[in-house]
Each structure stands twice: as C-alpha cells, then as structure tokens.
Picture 1 (spheres, rainbow, N blue to C red):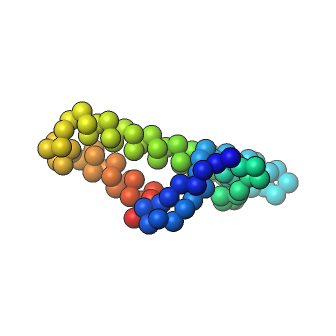
Picture 2 (tube, helix red, strand yellow):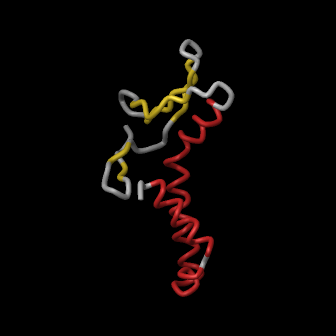
Length: 102
C-alpha cells in the first residue's frame, strides 16, 4: 500500500513508487500509484514519447526523494555559509519547490 505524500502546499498526493503500464488496447500509457487497488496518477497519450514520458513521471516520487537527500547531504558537507551561495543548491531548491507545487 502506498503512503500519501504532501506537496509544498499541504495537498496530499499518492505516495510512490509509481509504475507505468502500457495499455495497447487504448494506445496509451497509464501511470499508477500502487495500492491494494492501483490509483491512476495520469495517462500519457503522445504516440512518439509516451513510454519515455510515462517512465519519467512514474519515477518522480523517487527522483524527488533522491534530490532532497542529495541536497541535504551536500548542504551538510559544505556548511551553511557555502550552501547559501551555492548555485547548485539553488537549482536543487528550485526543482524541489516546483515538484512540491511552490
């Protein structure tokens, strides 16, 4: 069963990991949040890139968690003064805000 996660605005979203499933009958890929009864997160209908896009969407919860872990580890390693000046940390923070709806 997946746990609900929370966006930056406090809005719950389906916890990961998510899975992409090609449905050849409908010609689209559906991304599911695994649960006792899988929850459709989205459907991708671009005929050229649908599987690649669906795979990226399905990896989103794990990518966000990995980025947050990396950001924390780097910030701890370089210290607060360098963290405040780091362009890399600023990019991580922007991506995390965007993923969390901020």
